[in-house]
Image 1 (cartoon, rainbow, N blue to C red):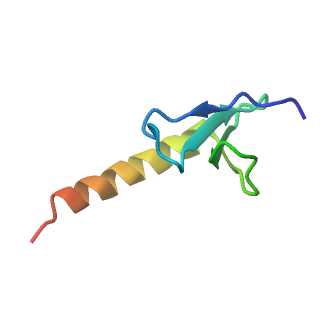
Image 2: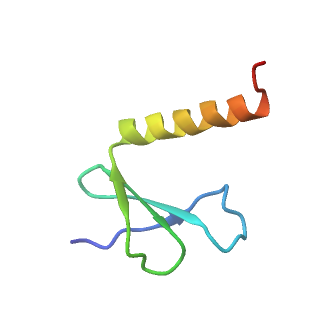
Length: 68
């Protein structure tokens, strides 16, 4: 398997637990936590990742502006 080139999320800043993202040769997106080689790496298509991010944004907005 070719080596992936991981990039730290711009939202991670200088915190200890950072999110890293890489694009694999097959076009899938890989997600992992921390600088070290993690035990778990998530794999998603770009469409699945976009849906996940949209869901996080929706839930964040609902927490910031609760109804009722």
